[in-house]
Length: 338
Length: 291
Image 1 (tube, rainbow over the protein chains, first blue to last red):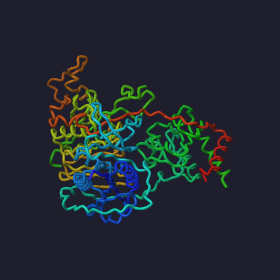
Image 2: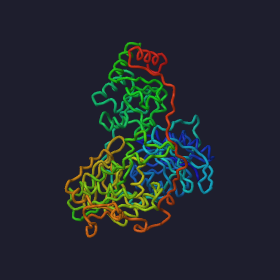
Image 3: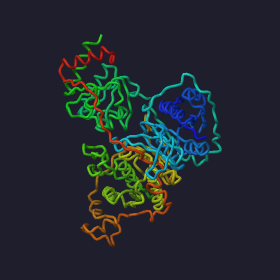
Image 4: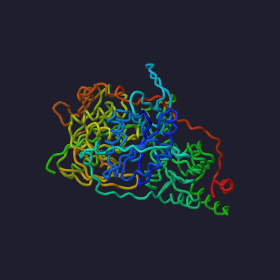
């Protein structure tokens, strides 16, 4: 009772990174709160994933396994989650800010009248005193950028449980335990929870592509912004990435302008990355973008505007025209490598 | 379609956070709303288009806009009317102030119950919060199914809708019966432009509050012109539990707000000269940052 429950998402029979990242964070929170970390796993033929969940510290795996649950559908998944939360009364519930988590979590929060904070970038435990002088110990601080990323807000949920939050993939670190915890599976009897009316939405067809672009796990990223100017010019960004063995990223403005695909978008509304080298090309450095890359170990900014905010977070700023700088970098690399 | 279907489009007026300038924040670190233009939330525009397409296709649908906000949010209802909507409701009341997504969804769900539509279409999320919560929260409060991230409503019959959804790595096609709540993704078709006839028809449309303003000098009198009335509802009009509205009905509380200040690191400034770039590349190769 009053533990932390992480909703664990699967993809093609594997646990999603975001769920393992949440479990890693959940372990720290559970230790601070002196409570247990638990997982909720919904799907079909997924019981074998429990072992991996123990490696990430889940002492109890609440398992709902049924052929009808193979693919996510809002109503049955919500019914199971709501019923479990009513029974277990978790103090904290965490969801990935994925297309599934962002569909499911608000539905659950609405049913339980518990607050939900979307897209947290940090989760901490702390006390809270409201203006009336009421005090609470050990609340979940749900920290997120707001207002287009121009402010960072700390949200608390003093009176309602569970305290719910979603977190994007790649924001938190993923780390398995050296020794798995001695966990156990607690099966949920789905027939007690689900009704026929939970299945009124039917999946007719699914066309899910393999993840092709993997900027999140790339050690080097070359990212282009609106300043690159055109789709044709964006080839230069790809050229540099190719010689460096890097992946190509983009700012929202570049994606919106159609220079490249949405999957490459870095920032608050895209992916969060922390490569060892981030080369920023023609990106002004709005906070919505930098929120997704400012943890990179090294940042090189290339922008002909000396006042562009990107230069302020860069380790190396090249003030110059990218049409000149990028070919020179490629040539220099070819000359000096090996 | 035999039955006339009533569609409610949920829309929000938002500050245009996509074009945030230097004056967007006050020196005290609060948001300078006056410096930001108020716009029709972009994905709600995509939602409106899907509703208008149903109206075009079936020839038997009524499209109503529903928004919650201050008096000036009536602007987006007019914008919707100019593009083909048939009417609008503005939810406005001081008691709605300070609402988080849950209290917002409560107020909206109460208003939707009063309108009693067959279909509710909303944008996936609003650009001022990017939470994507209000749609699903409203669906839960209405106890109806939801289909999120719609890219296209492929078909609609009396029995069901067929909807293509945009997911992270692909698409999914689902069927769902009405009543239903659909949230629309930014990859859906953009909204059609204003229609000149609609603009002529609705340019004087206004709420009762706007009509009462002394400085209002509209061409047509509102009295007797029902089609020009933008319905205005407050807490008393939609009923429900008083304590579930506004900040009282919001489980989440803002503890702290910090303005983002870039932490200046010591950056090495380089030029586009060959020497500078060469030395950088050599340095990166030497310390194995690049291989």
